[in-house]
Length: 385
Ligand SMILES: [Zn+2]
Image (cartoon, rainbow, N blue to C red):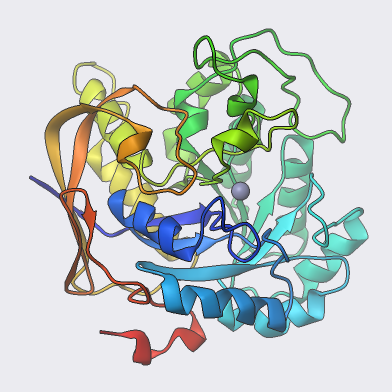
């Protein structure tokens, strides 16, 4: 039996408020516990987006009554909420800035809007940026200009990891995360560069998931990249601070529709995928991935980067030798599918203890709704059981 500390996922789309047919605080936190994740940080691009006190209260009220693992909620940076966001910072996981894509109210069309947030958001709370390719370089420049840390979400490209490596070597305060799908899946077709401004430059491509499945199932942002990109990520694991899922559930009906929304579920599959990679690494002469890497990138580093508290008496038990097939039918997410359907993996979460209570055991979530605690200021000791 392998014992790991409670894992922290700093990038989860819980979908509540507004899209609870895909997921909600109950199902997202059940899935997280089943995946060995005892604390998650929730993204703000819900419906409505979380960008002021009333929307923050809305999602935190739902979380308080439904969450089964611990959590904090990001606030979204909008064109005119820099002061509000700065004031709310202690109640949030941090500030999320969408620098490439437009997400309703969370539009940051020009860099003068970035300036207000970099100037005003308190330095002790993290700024996380969705910034691909060259806009990532701009975000790193802002970190340098304002001498404050910035965390780059879901890097996927060779050029991104190499630029972050160079920035770190110069002492810039930049950290980053990589998602399992960008480590384990590739785009199978030739790539077509898009003009600057359209985000990640990987064009539409056919499905890698076999015949009869819609191409929409592989829609994700950032898009799946080339084998060369994937190899470069693996070769630069030391540059990567965190593994995060970007758990972004959509129903199969939506994924197979004419306009498939981008995103994959991920909280229940990240650990088995990484443990399988560790197991495969043991057969190679060159170091690739180790258990200490997983602990560093899914516990130690996110805890430090996002300034998160200890979870006392919290751990995850894993049967390292259990070999099995990933099947959506066994998962807890409401979305009902996984891009890793049928993958053979080695390493199963058997038990999760959260703050001294058995929260998950042998396929069953035991933590009750509302057991999850907000780890930011207003979570308070009253949530402790
Ligand atoms: Zn995301």
